[in-house]
Length: 255
Image (cartoon, rainbow, N blue to C red):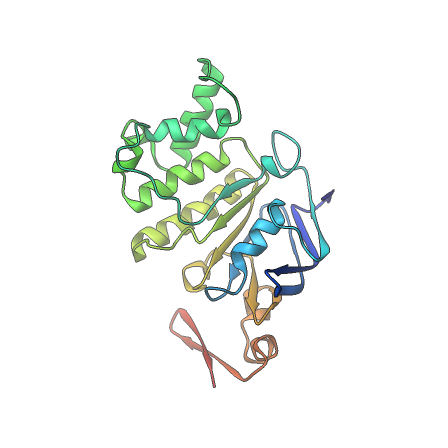
């Protein structure tokens, strides 16, 4: 992984797992403070792409380049919210403790009390709208509240790149809309680039600056109006696709 003046550059990335090509020649650039939706059906390779960006999966070819990403070198300083985190209702941790683990989780032993550390945790709890339930056991929180805490955990070290894998899954429509609006606000306030994977682009339409659309082992990227078009998606899928606009929603259908 090399340093880039952009927040993230994915350059002709190809990944093969268990003998199957997951995707090939995927390229896109994410500038600082950009909000980008990584869109694709289940099984299209979104999680694999995020794991490759993080360095967890080795590509067959291509390169990932990042800019200075936060308080510490390398991908460990990138904020990351993985998919399907199950928080045990009996877990003896408060919401604020989970956020604090973003600062202390790589250290052995108990964290030492620190006014600066507490101030950072309090700041992030406020930033994600979680101050009112900061003292509650995290396993007792709703799905939307837990997602806010996980975002705060990922951002507490002030990264310049935040990756989120399907953070809207299993949330109701209202909670999903609130999380997307929150992430847009955090993107602007903390000058962080956001790459969020989802199978449905509609909750993101009003907020994202650009889109990376994964299908059929390939990707198209750009502004939404440049990518979500009949001609572009038909080439991407390899068969005719209709893009239908219904009020403020977009429906992608095979012909």
